[in-house]
Amino acid sequence: MTPPTGRGGRPDRVALVSQWFPPEPAPFAQGITDALRRQGFDVDVLTGVPNYPKGVVYDGYSARRRTVEDRDGKRIIRTPLYPSHDRSALGRAVNYLSWAASSSLLGGSVLRDADVALVYSSPVTATAAAMAARRRWGTPYVTMVLDLWPDSVFATGFLTEGPARRLAEASLGRFTDRTYRRADHVTVPTPGLRDTILARGVPVDKVSVVYNWADEKVMQPTEPEPGLRARLGLGDDDFVLMYAGNHGPAQRIDVAIDAVARLADLPDVHLVLVGDGVEKDALTARAAGCRPGQIHFLDPVPPDRLPARMAAADLHLVSLADEPLFRITLPSKVQSILACGQPVLACAPGDVARIVRDAGAGFAAPPENAASLAEVIRLARATPRSRLRAMGRAGRHHYLAHMSQATNVQVLADLLTDAARRARSARRDRESR
Figure 1 (cartoon, one colour):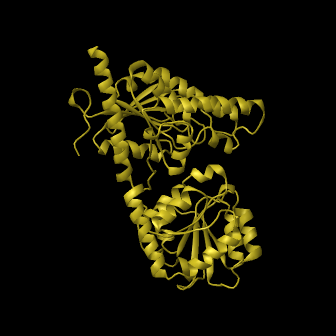
Figure 2: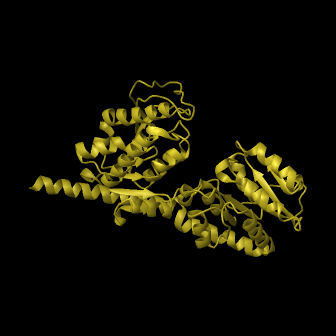
């Protein structure tokens, strides 16, 4: 690929603005940086002092000091913040706002030199520095909307009620809408979220879907984990529905347990639950009371072992509660399952079910409806395994065409190049007057 060229014929320089970046667990921010560099961009990073996820500053850093690192040929500017990641609404607010202020005041060197900024806008306050740079130096910015703000904040119980909630919701809503209006382009990870952003008044030609991709070095078709079925007392002919992921209230795994309980006439149907979470003890007790021997719980495994464990199942469950926010949410497990070439049963609203149907990758059942889910499991169990494998292949083809790193980084690269070129053209027009 010919590198995108900026001022003086050099490659376009991108400033990635993200409150979190390695050594914090921020694989997607790191992945975007590496992918854009492979596309020919020069990439610098404006980020915070590492303290996530515990709210404790990492060894070798200070929460009060700006630092500059050179790592793998890229410049990383870290500006101060108030370290906090507990459940305190005040602590989280100060954490977000302190970095918004320090990145705006002390991040100028990386943003002034950039042809375009790319904002990883979760939290949305991370956009403040890019907005300031646009006003001061005309640096264009593309913002990646990963979560719908302020909706997603309050859905997690950040503030529950009262005047503080109303004030925060109104303020965040106004600021969020301003970040969209002033951005040169907005990207979203799901079609449903695009529809929501458009409904808030953002022009249709200003919003594009850029899917989050799976870890493609790990998430690939592979052979089943040896001996897994035997350890669970299952035969080769048993039908295995597997769920791998968090066992929390948002996932409503209890619905799947209740659905399997309705299939007493199909003793060869088994539900295998891989993972952990706050609901696991309650789910274990629920399963023991309805279908002992048919529902199995397994501990989490490292990501590099997960594809082989997944390959031991016949079908993979994606389950979400029937909440408005989840209609525009795409859990990362969807991309992982599709990338591994496995068929899917989507017991979830909105985008999850839509993508599975569009890809021809499996089945869909209404969320939070055990009776309907039981009937879909019955249908899947009656489907020949050759047909299930064909669904898995169709899902992988869909992933490679629409959701892969190569496809989506190219979309992102084109948007960044276009924003940089338009800004240079506008600058030349001003200078020629």
